[in-house]
Amino acid sequence: NTQPSAFSVSASSAAMAGAYVVQVNHVALGQRNVLSFNNLTDTADSSGSSVPTSLTLTLARAATVSSPNSATISLADNTPQGLVTAINASADFKSLGVSAQLVDTGSGATQDRYKVIISGAVGAGNGFTLDGNGGSTPVWLDHVDPNSPGAGEQAANDAEFVVNGVTVTRPTNTVDDVVTGVTFNLYDTTTGVARLSLNRDPSVVKAKIKDLVATYNSFVDSMNVLADPKSNVPTYGGALAGDSLLRSIREQLRTALIDRSSGAGTNITALRDMGIMFDRNGKLELTESKLDTALANNFNEVVSVFSANGENQSMFSTQAGGVAGDMVKKLDAMMRSTGLLALQTQSAEGKITRYNDDLANLDTQMQRLLDRYMKQFTLMDSIVGQSNSTKTSLQNSFDGMMAAYKR
Image (tube, rainbow, N blue to C red):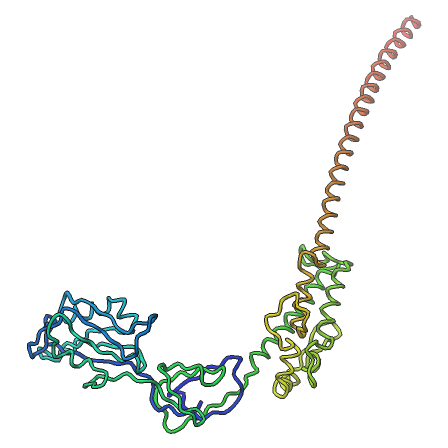
């Protein structure tokens, strides 16, 4: 944009690259009128004319059933502050885009010291008149005229600008229906003509592709930790060593990334054509120069390889989804309630339940065995005790007999 001070532009994904010549003749303005008062207690201007007891606002546009163009307020307080308060407190005035502001210019006790600025919404249809009811109209209401602005005032008008030779008028300074996918925000008139170029910026797409590579490589690191029986990582290290589930997931995702895309183009058919390859460690490598070339020369095919030019597809759609779309479907199939991960989880949980039951049964059996051994040991201890007692008794008897014999 060669004149950003006059207008700015934002573009959505629907915008097409191209060049435009733009000239802003004038921006949309809202009506602004300035009423003068001598002091804060004035109820009329210096002419002494009376003030109305109510004010009726009427817009320039025609009224419809759903969009009225007029409203009336009562003036209980006919001072400048009362006028401002009544206008700003009215929901009807607000819905018609009209508000008021009181300004003290500080110029002393003159007719122009206090100003009531009444402002409307932008666009010629929002020009307004104010009429006094319930009394003669004071002179200051003569200034509230969309066609005769005085000093410091302005009339309401629509924006007018030219795009590639076509003159456009709109009742707003934000225009999004002239160039598809492009929103113009008008600020000021241009100096002559401005030139606008819409060029595709591939940096966001490139950043997302680099994120994909980094995320997949992080996934590989996690898989390696789970599969390594010698891993020192707490809790998870080697947790699935030798498990076929890891090999299945790894192969499915690797195949999805390496195979020809279901959204293949003529020049870009797979990730390898945009510089994304597997290294000897099973991780992705990105050759940025090759990706830059693909984005610059075959951007639409890069998009198609990833998405098959589809949006918001259902997980159960049978249409091609490109590398990204097909992988999302594959991952969803793995993780849903009937998928591989859920079935493996249920199988593991079933084994854990059976193991816990076996442990409980084994604990019961071991307790019974311990109780039996304790009874046997107790009985044996009793027998040993009785034998020792008998031995002692016999020994004493033999000793007595030997002593008698010697005598």
